[in-house]
Amino acid sequence: MINPEVSDQTNAKKPVESTASHNLVSEAYSSSTPRTDGSIANADKETAISKDGQLLFGSFDHLYGAKTATGTVGKPGEGSSGTGGGSMIKESSMALNKNVQTAEAPIVAPNKVDKNINPSGVDQSTVGDCFFEAALASLASSPKGQEKIKDMIKTNKDGSFTVTFPGDKANPVTVTQKDLAANTSNSQVADSGNWAKIIETGFLKYDHAEQYGHGLNALQSEGIPNLGNIAYSDKALHLLTGQDVSTDAIGFTNIDNREITLGNTSQENIKNAIENSLKSGEPITATTTAGFEKYLGANSSGPLESSHVFSVTGYDAKTGMVTVRNPWGSNEGTALAKVGITKDGIKTLPDGQLEMSLNTFTSHFNSINFAGQNPYLNDAENIGKDALHQLGDGGKFGKDLFTGNFGKLGGDLWNFAKGDWQTTSDILYGITDSGERAVKTVLSDAWDTGSSLVKGAVHDGEEVVHDLNPLNW
Image (tube, rainbow, N blue to C red; front, side, top):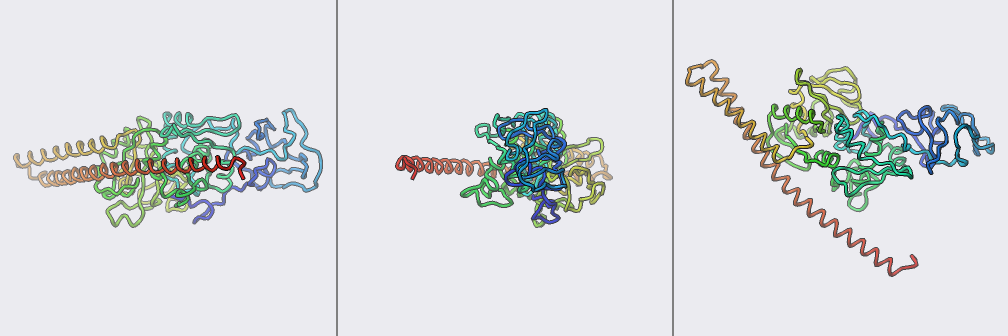
């Protein structure tokens, strides 16, 4: 799940450096290479805005050679002189803040929230939230999803943002510039799109991930709370869309979405579901398994990153080719790192995209999640479709038998037997999937009730302490 491109990981890519204070001058020039990810330190593109929202200058070109109380600011790569003293930056044609030296540069300026939303703005970093990032990128791949994303972000007067997830509108999250600074400086959030930076940071706060985890939420794996509510694909898709989410098993055993299921559905059902979801603009994610699971009946991930979630962004009905995207924004550190190569039928495209046939897709992915589908109705439909297909094969076998068409008899009998197994497998998955969902619902409700009681007791205790200690000793 974690991107091996980033620091502390195998095949690490050095993260962009920044200062903890995000002082305007030191932020812009502490590194010899200016940022190119659209943040405020991009010397040629951004408008600097002070903490109180005052316009400072239209480009960092205005800073070159300017003097501050601590020295002269040089161009990127030149460093800054330590002469001390000197005049403050002189006023140009724009209004300048009198205290430029200590002004905090916003990581995402209020007027720099991207209007151009697309999957390439999502780049997972050191946090193991591929389930969320893949869902977000898939949502960004359709006009319908792009509108949902725009509606999630509200810009506040103080330079902060309010993120409201459609799946939990009652609990909006405030994302401050301090939050953005903390998460980008330590490479927890490295999305190239500003909109994605805001939403992923909002998710980390919402899910109590990384430094936002306290109490039981401090027990984490790859930065995600072990007992967190949003830790798998179906929950992430629901949070981002507010819709029901169904999961189709591709491998016979499926350990995903905190479920262990047996049985799967047919390739034809997978194809139809992908086509329908893409046409309606609904996001789709697909999951690979850990290596050991192939010995339990799951599909092998092959050259794909194992235990990872990908966005499903395209299907060509004429060629039967499926396009997926790695939320890392590349496939570095895997057997598919180089753009243009083809391995095991999988072709590497730019921006972390991969193209493969439907057969290859259903051989290496183990499950697929669709937003906008009721899981119980979806399971019933899969059973019905495969049962009808089986009846058709049975009819062909009967016709061959009675007409003496023995040349086709064996093949149609085999197809009927396969159809019988497929229908049985559909039924088995429907039973285990529905049963697990029912159990999870009961456990989730019990957890929510217990959490509310604990939070209420803590709140009441704090009030008692406050009443007994009015002077806050």
